[in-house]
Image (cartoon, rainbow, N blue to C red):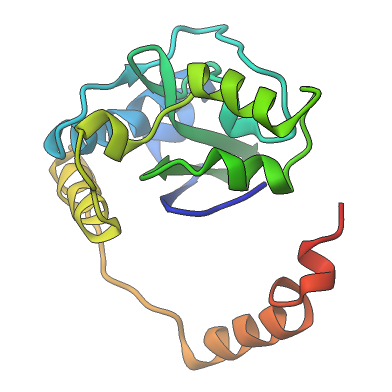
Length: 188
């Protein structure tokens, strides 16, 4: 999976929170509400994909609009996944600011015969915030819109946070050993 030119988000909910009790579908919808509002604030009209949606089959989950993804003009704009345990759940997703489909399919496997074919198919099924807003939407602008939208949601209290020194050192070590290495990133 390629993460590039996007804003990622994650929401962690403990089992004791009422949102956990709503179940998978309703909690997705609740979390996606502020994301749709943030998109509207930057000039993008978006909605949740119809339940049971499917799309282009690829190793890149982002190219296949699916249930509870956020779409604009029936093309995938925000992809999310939720992991539930008895202790709570984590929902993580990506808001694509700009597409570079050539780069995506240079690193992600596809069932299409060529990269060009994969790009042509994916163009029909996915889009980006900047494409839909008809202007460049920056990381900061989108992140700020998400903060405002989530802050306005009932029962949400956002707190500014940053990595501790230990967390930053651990991250630097993981980058040096794994994610910053060409041999690991080029491995398929």
